[in-house]
Length: 52
Image (cartoon, rainbow, N blue to C red; front, side, top):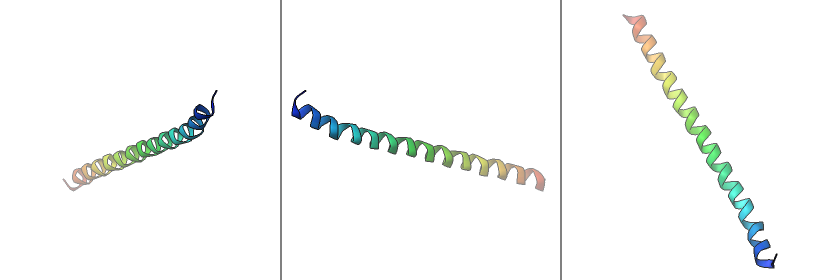
């Protein structure tokens, strides 16, 4: 392996790891936000049913 390819790997691998971690955390946050929105909608429906 030449010096350029080693330097590329030493830069590319950590950068791709950071990007992958960021995307995973973003997906988890979006999923949590969606679940909390669904719970609020369900809780609102339960409250309406109690009022009637």
